[in-house]
Image (cartoon, rainbow, N blue to C red; front, side):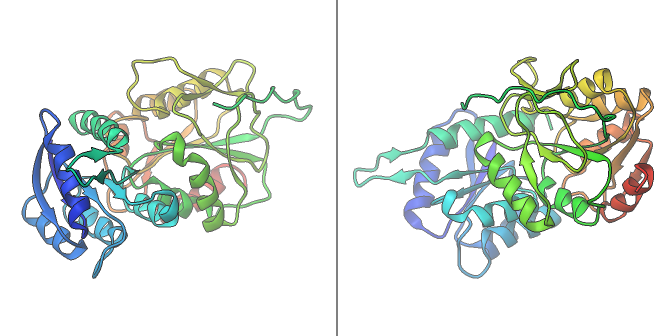
Length: 334
């Protein structure tokens, strides 16, 4: 890949340059010292991946990500001095299309680079994506006596956090619907993403627990690097298999398990995202009578996942994100 580096700190930029040049099949496309320069460079010479700092003068990494994903969309990895210390900005950037975040490696006095392992791993993961355009688990809850709730399923990737928050905010709160979200996000960010979505929407968004049953009013988020699946017993579980599926957690794997095991139809949405994950699962849900919706191109940060579903005939309809809440509520009886 051709990788661009955006960082206003000379030592950090040099550390990133050394990491990139040490990797086979990757090269530095260009470097920028702030968001203004990065936006201009991306328009002139769009790279395969941008390593984007967050805290910079003039235009920060959040706004630079937003403008680049509008004018010259490409893969963006947030690389910041402290992910945990900038977590709100991280989620803002992910809402605008950044794929992931990692701490910046440190350049030592002798020129050595330390702390590069996580960055190298994430670059490798994104390279596959671009090329393809442990706590104990709680025991299952006892079976509920009431009829199972209607389900709203949501799959998303690049740009998903903001789209999901825009979807959830206007939805009814007192209804017999359980919402389950599969967003491509590393396990390290799942709990924080749930809190961020909760803060933005005023809802109790929680990471799904192994063995948990979807209940009315739940908003549950897939929260590990294993796949979230619905079991024959209608509980949510995390499974390592299928291991050959690149996206973890996979929207396809989850949607297909729900199509197999949930006793009634509901609504499934495939939102903004890079790649094709979700199209096959959405098709299976549609074949079982579910109402399936893909996000339109105009409101998607990256229109790969929804487009794949539309091209496959998996979507009953295509809607902008701001029209989805009303359509979903109408379908699910609110």
